Image (cartoon, rainbow, N blue to C red; front, side):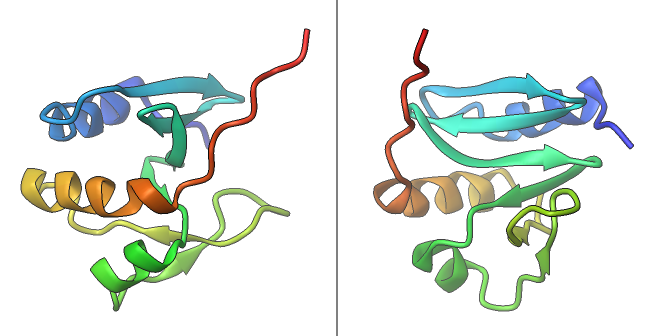
Length: 105
């Protein structure tokens, strides 16, 4: 099942206090970037983030879920209605997110 543009817009609205939040559509889903680094994505209308230490500490009871079959597990973000929570989560994660690889032409 593909994610809806409406859900993406809802999540982007909750992250609107952060600078440089972007996304890329990919096979019916959306990859979320924070300041040029992949933070997570929207898969089947669920916000999943990379399981870096800071995210695990920020959400100690979060469930691990697969974004799609064959992928690595990610953390499910349940508190998507809480703008302050999401902003804090992305800020906490930033330093641990790997630099995005530039595409080769």
